[in-house]
Length: 334
Image (cartoon, rainbow, N blue to C red; front, side, top):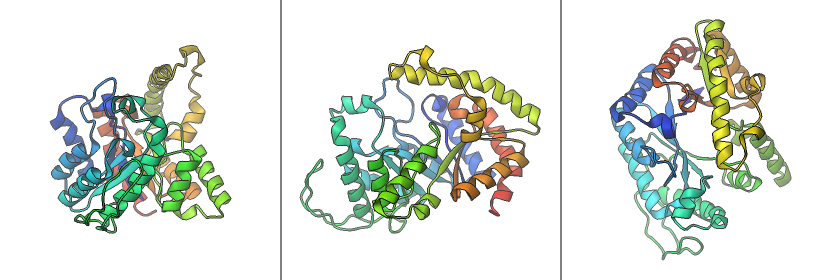
């Protein structure tokens, strides 16, 4: 199995850059395969790393094997010709260790600041994806109309990875999932909400189109919180402290959508553990991951050891080290 890291976004990235970079140097030493970073441009509350490609370039320069992915590049915000050059450059600088997650985006602040009409984002997303893949394959681009208009372009230097760096699509609507199916692009499945509705929607779209989604699903990437400990008591202690924090975070994001705190349901711990967590002793974690793979067919897992910033980096690193020693070797055999 491919085992990556995720969860370092927004406030979880605050602090000294050198210490932050050392986390992922250590992750490579421990044997993890990759790490993923989000893009939130021009947010209402600034954070240190609005550009995942700039962060990727910095970390790829400090590592030798670790892959770095974007989860996701918000395509409507970027001119595809410029973005293609940047992706190709990072792929070249890293000798082909870049993964490209793409999406339409969910944050209205950047659209408002850049005066991009929300109703235009689907057309921008689909046109940009098509152009990026053509450009990164080293193909000449014909004259374009639509959101981005330009005369015919000569081919740029292709990316190192062939035919281009791996692309993943984040999305849950029938339109986006249908586009992923049409383009044969695997999915970056979400953590909150969990991937169940996405996979059900994917299957419904595939059935309506008379297509089989199994191969695309197998190449997709799942995400899970990971809470690991030497014994059940240690894990229970960590989780008991986490539930109130998770609930407060859900209240915060619900408030940004105009939902009052009283309307945010309490955490259903049993359901959250079942749908969003790998938890327990190393033996239990291995068994849950093996069962998850058997159920979904997916062999690519993004592990969130820091509870998306609710657990400190030192705690996350201890959990990563235990997981690497006692779970990763067995997963390599799956």
